[in-house]
Image (cartoon, rainbow, N blue to C red):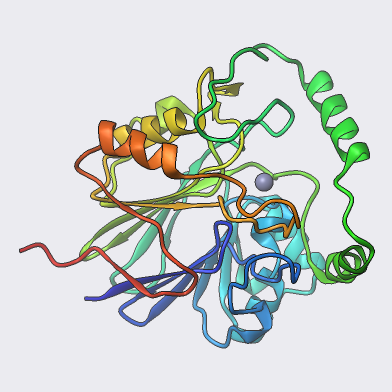
Length: 301
Ligand SMILES: [Zn+2]
């Protein structure tokens, strides 16, 4: 069996599991100032399934286009299913899930869905290498008020890019709500692949998950059991890696997917790499380029 992984930036990947094509998120239609990931959702002609981690635009956009063009089934939250229904995806292609479901992808491959958490976007985030503390016990109302004021501040783009952004936003689907984050554990005859697209988890749930490969988003303020991590991005990633104990670990979400002209990369992953080499020495750290067809789960000798 051969399993290959192609990265399209952010936390969008295509797995090819012996001919079974599974997308992890579907966001690839980016501003021209973002690094060139070499594809738009309209370019995708073949897909069997798409697993959507949560309903924000930078994860779900393109799922409508891919589902309509390929007939792929989409597994995601009920919010993800609602957004896709509104975008005209037939109900028969949607497998809304809340965690606990076991989906059969073909005769040999299954995926288990787990309830998870989104990173604390309402709190303070920092680049890797920076320890953050505080913001414990902030209420729902206060979190919502902070998100609203963040949105009002919003980043300003040069005029040409702002126009392009407007045009993109008119056709990219997404929800203002994460819809409840989900993690996925894909089981193949050659091993298991864990996918977490936002930095958050319920520790009681994560504690029961082991995988041969872990694919993780690493950007933002980690969320552990509903509260912001008291620590750094690399500490968050190391906690997940030590729990899931993968042989291969793929890092994502750190590229400049939004195309901010002043930000070459969202996250410098060097401090994360250093922390992982120290605390998870058994894991091979994989930093894929865009669509470079990395082989996962190599046959054990
Ligand atoms: Zn998000």
